[in-house]
Amino acid sequence: MKKTVRDLTDAELRGKRALVRTDFNVPMDDGRITDDTRIRAALPTLQFLLEKGARPVVLSHLGRPKGKPNEKYSLQPVAKRLAELMGIKVGFVETTDTDEATKASHDLPAGEILLLENTRFLGGEETNDPRLARALAELGDFFVNDAFGAAHRAHASTAGVNAHLRPAVAGLLMEKELAYLGNALSNPQRPFVAVLGGSKISGKIDVIESLLPKVDALLIGGAMACTFYRALGLETGKSLVEEDRVDMAADILDKAGTRLILPHDAMVAPGLDSAASARSVGRDGIGTHEAMLDIGPGTSESYARAIASARTVLWNGPMGVFETPPFDRGTRAIALAMADATTKGATTIVGGGDSAAAVAHEGLSDSMSHVSTGGGASLEFLEGKPLPGVEALDEKAES
Ligand code: ADP
Ligand code: MG
Image (tube, rainbow, N blue to C red; front, side, top):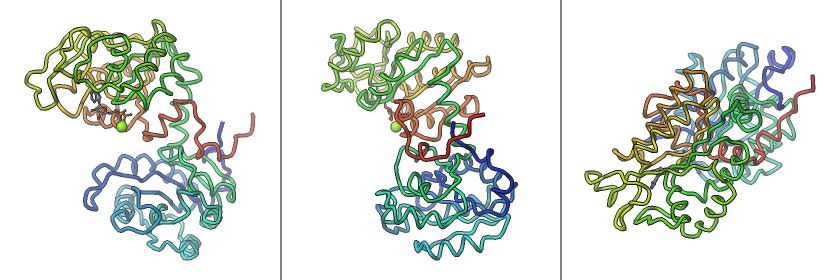
C-alpha cells in the first residue's frame, strides 16, 4: 500500500510547501475550459492540505506542447477556474525558470494556492531529465501525486521528482482510483462482471488477457466484437475488423471458454450516415454491405441482466458508435444497468475516456461507484502494468 496525504503527521504538513502534481489536462476550446471534471476531482486533496496548514504548489501538464512554451496550452485559464471553485486566491507563475518559481513557492502565503505553468513547456519533462527532476524538487518540502491520469508516464513531474523529495505520497484522488481499480483486480466481490467495448481489439488485448482469469464473465461489445465474429467465421460486412488480429481473437476464444460472451445480435446499417436504415439482426445476419455499429437490443437486455446479478462491474469502452444515434442505445443500456446495480449495492467502476464521456452524457456519472479520471492510466492499470507515478511513491509502513 502506498502512503497517502492522510498518513502524514501534522508536523509534516503545517506550514510546509506541498508540491502537488495534479492532472489538469482539461479539454479546452479557444482558451475556454469545456469540462472542468479533472479540476473538481483534485479539490479534496487541495482542501485537505489547506486545512492542515500546508501550502500547495501545484504542477500539471496540459496538451502536447512538446517541450516549449506555447500560449495555446497555458494553464492560466485553469488557475482562474481553480480560484473560482476553491473560493481562494490562486497565484499563477508564468515563468518556466524554475529558480523564479522556487522563489515564488517560498513566498506563498498560508491559505493560498500557487499553480505553475504547464510542465510540458519544460524541455526535460517528458524525457524525465534528472536535472529537471532535481529542480522541481526545490519547489516543495514534500511531494503529493494526485495525477492518476498521468501516472502511466515516467516524466520528471510524475516519477522523477520523487527521487529528490520525501515524503512522496498519494493524494486523495489517486488513493480513490487505486482503491477502486485495485480492489476490482485483487479482491472483487463476486460475481465480478467486466464489460469491454470500444473501437479496437488491438488496444485492449492486454486488458482482456489480464481480466479473463479474474472475472466471472467478460461481456464484449463495440467494434472489437466484429474481430471476434470474424474469428468465428461469421460475415462482418463493412464492420470495423482488425484483420491482423483475427488469429489472436481466435486464440482468446479458445482459451476463454464460456466466460467470454459475444453479442448475439447487432444493430447494423450501410454506414453512419444512413442511420434511417438501421436494423437489428442476429449475429449471423450481417449483410455484406452493412456494418455493425452497436450491439443489438437482445444483447443489451442480456448484458443488463448479467450486470444486475453482479456484485462488481467494471466497464471500459462503449458498446457502439455512441456519438451517433441510434447507435448509442447499447452504451446507454449498459450505463443504466450499472446505475441500477449501484443502487442495489454493487460496486460499479467506469474506466476509459470515451466511456466516461458517454456516462457523463447520460447524466449518470454520480450514479456509479467510481468513474476513473484516467483513460490510458486506467487501461494500463487493468492490464496489470506497474504505473511509474505510483511505483515512485512511499510505501505505507506495515501495521
Ligand atoms: P474508451 O476511451 O472508453 O477506452 P475506446 O477509445 O476504446 O473507448 O473506444 C471508443 C470508440 O469506439 C468510440 O469513438 C466509438 O464510436 C467506437 N466504436 C464503438 N463501437 C464501434 C463499432 N461497432 N464500430 C465502429 N466504432 C465503434
Ligand atoms: Mg478512447
